[in-house]
Every structure is written in structure tokens, then in C-alpha cells.
Image (cartoon, rainbow, N blue to C red; front, side, top):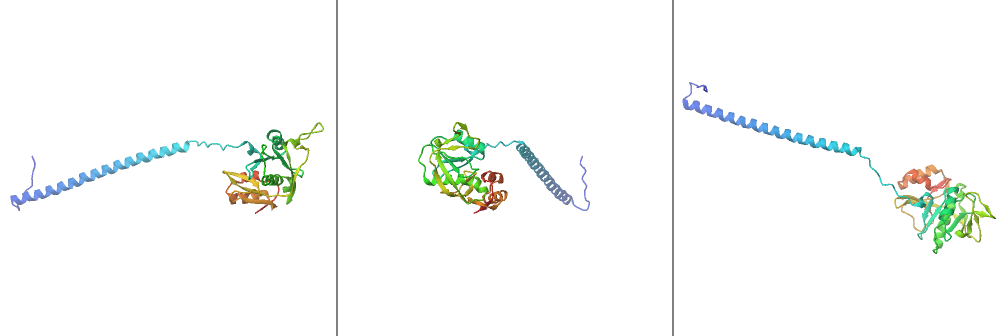
Length: 265
């Protein structure tokens, strides 16, 4: 049984109208409440979905951070253990970094058809032009001569130039009158081709993504190559300056430099 309060001051019709209006207001409030509840449930569902997505992304990022990235090793050519460059004519030239490498170059990598270069000073690398029996132009010969001169003791002594000679591979030997020549020494027989007063000079640049050192007289140098001649700037400071100009690491530059001081052109 539902009890209904009647206002005696109002007629039956007026009481009915009053209750009808109150019922409409209550219905409207109920609709508002239902809508508010629905909106709240929708927002809660969206937040839960967002939280699930964020947690999944966080877990993925965490997993990715634990992965070890394995970089492909940079493949080195056999001649990159030595001093090397490619002449304007496309010939490979290699030079020893020390007496042991000089021995290896002559014994293992110099053929009869190759050319042997050496600066006329005590303390110079054995430098070989891999001619392989092909005709070599004068420009290529001058480039290799400067390369051999620049890595000799002449740079450390501050010389501006030094004489360099060239012979065929067959003219180089390790024996003198039946006796073996000490490590780093060679016997040269026959006529020599001389490159008198060869100027010392190197160019350090980037070629095919690698730091390289070339003779300064190379017909075509890489863009932004830094030209070097003997000078007063010490090796470490020269390397730092080259690094800032070319954007390559100091530990890449240093092995390219001969012993001694530098002037950057």
C-alpha cells in the first residue's frame, strides 16, 4: 500500500498535477544519474585500456633495453695493417710501420713485377707499389716517392725534402755475399731510379668511410683533406686539430701520422 499526502488546500485535480510535476522532476533526475553513471563507467574503461597499453609499451621498452645489439664488424683489407694508399692510377702502395713490417712486405707481398721505394736516409719504410707488371705513370711514381719520403726519419728531423729511389722487385735481396742481412735491411742491386729532393707532405682525409693518409701530390684529394708538412706542432695537438676539422676520432688519426712535428695547411 502506497500512502499519498493530500494538500487539503488544493483541489483533487491540483493535487494530482502537483504529484505529476514532482514525478517528472524525479524521472529527469534519475535519467541524469543514469547518464552520469554511464559516463563514469565509460571513462573508467578508457583509463583501464590506456593503463594496459602503457604497461605493455613499458614492458616492451624494458625488453628492448635488455637486448644486446651486435654490430657487424668492419671488414679490413689485408693491406690495412700497413701504411697504404691508392695512387691516382689505381695502384695499391703499401709501406711498413716498423722493421718487422718491412720484412713482411718484402718477403710476402712484393712480387718480381712490383716496384720497391726507399728514402735515402737511415730509418725509412720499405714501400712497395703493387704494379703487377702493368705500366706505371710518372704521376703514380711521384706519389709513391713522396709517400715513402714522408714516413721516413726525414719528417722527424724536420727536413723539407729527401731523395728517394725506386727499383724493381727482382733487385731487392736479403743476402750479401752469402750472408743474411739483419732485420729491416735489404741489399739493392743494379740501377736505381731517383726522385731527387722529393718534398715531404701528406694529406689526411676520409675515403669510403675510413680515415686515410695520402701523399699531398695525389692528383685528386678527398674533400676537406688536411694537408700536413713538417713543423712545430706536436703530434697530439695535430691529431686534435685534424679531428675537429674532419670529425674523425683521434685514435683513428694518430696511426696515420709520421713521427715528428707538424704544420697544418
